[in-house]
Length: 195
Image (tube, rainbow, N blue to C red; front, side):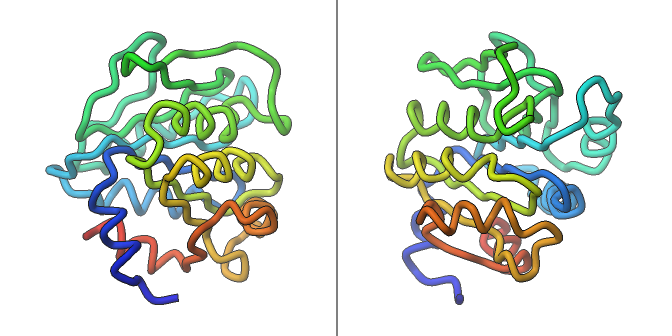
């Protein structure tokens, strides 16, 4: 699917970019972190599944290769523009109305903590149509319900084309419930987000 004027305009009006992924999404998210320009003027929130109690070098690797300020989310931290935030392991990340993050220790969702659904639904409640959300490769259905809520609240919602995803289940689950307004290949997603 070519990038039409509607998707370009909606992307330009977004203030928040939320990215979700699990198995097979790391390389794509890493590439995105590298290409986003230092004057991006949007807030980026990344939720990526990680093994419980598994020490992760993701933040360090991403930060060393990002041209934007990049940080792991802390509880009650104010949300800033022009910053990439990564959801920490073993917590659910939520967004509060006053523009703060909040970390939650409740049970895993789809066996995952952080859960993409939890963050996407929270962002949908607060930011509504000012959001662009992308769901990448993954091996379970986490993110599909949250992407649908984002779409119903006016956000621009995109799923990676399952035919090219390393693990098709996550984007396919979103497509099956009509949560994704656009189904794009990774190179089209990069092209859009670089505009």
